[in-house]
Image (cartoon, rainbow, N blue to C red; front, side, top):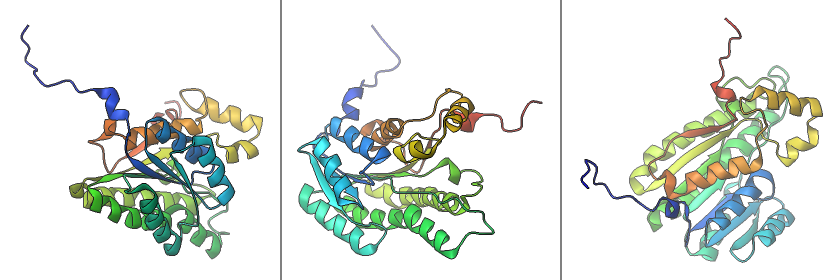
Length: 267
């Protein structure tokens, strides 16, 4: 049999495997981070460093995952702890092949009433750690031959973010940072991407949403449901694996199709 296409067919399933690789998950103590740490471990990662500001949460998630997990506690919005994480993770794992950075939180305040403290806090918790970890871990990835970085942004950074404008601005900055990372580090075999979740029923959101809010958010999505933390972990696994080996500098929107809707009502 002859064919015009003689290109070899790869083992696509093997491209999802992470065997022998070591990953750092920042914000692994709950929600998207916990699910992502499990996803990387299930895909064969040799080490998963479970980072959280709360030592108990980091330890609990690491215990759930088992022998490949390494708990680590600290505040990686500071240079001191980000540098300590880089050194201690490399010592524990031998090398760092990937980062998934999930840290972030929104405060709800109007622009005219927002305090300097809130604005600075949002920059720290949504953007500064991306800068610090991409340096501290990126240098190690470059030295060892390459790696992947995945940052959790938000759809609030793609549009207006009413009543949480500082959060939206910080997440928009994170997505811009990812593009620059991709261009600067791509020649050194380091890929960088972002994920922009829509409304995700994380433990934190589940605790504050009313039944009516859950219903309204589900109905607003073309898929007619809210997103789960495992939906975000699945996207992070894809961007961390060789299935996405030619993807860098991109933001993957995971919002059930909301962003695709026509925004101007019925014509």
